[in-house]
Length: 122
Image 1 (cartoon, rainbow, N blue to C red):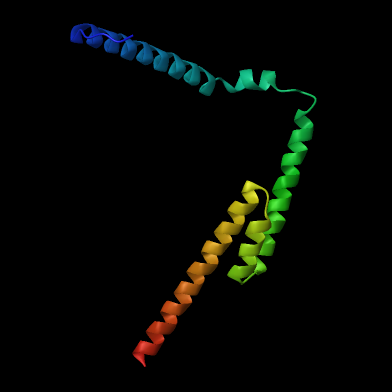
Image 2 (image 1 turned 180 degrees about the vertical axis):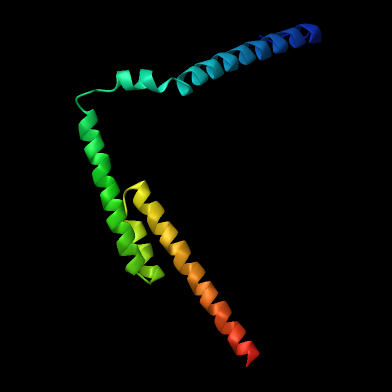
């Protein structure tokens, strides 16, 4: 409601700020308790039947990433790598492809710099 008394308005605003501060503190405490749970308690909550399956999936993903890395070493065109990047679905795949693009561009810049140095010295 509207009030014309400035002192009352200040008290209301300070009460609102205090409530907001308390709510933020509660939220921070909740986040902190979730963030710093011990590893043991999270392992207890895991579904033990699915754990070996998820482990094998992780190993398969690592093998797939290793083979992708080998394929990326053979590619020498930024355009091809960009096409692969657009087609990639997984974060880790995109990460590897972006790293390969950065490496290739750095090599191109280095080659151009060396060519420029050779040309200027002649």
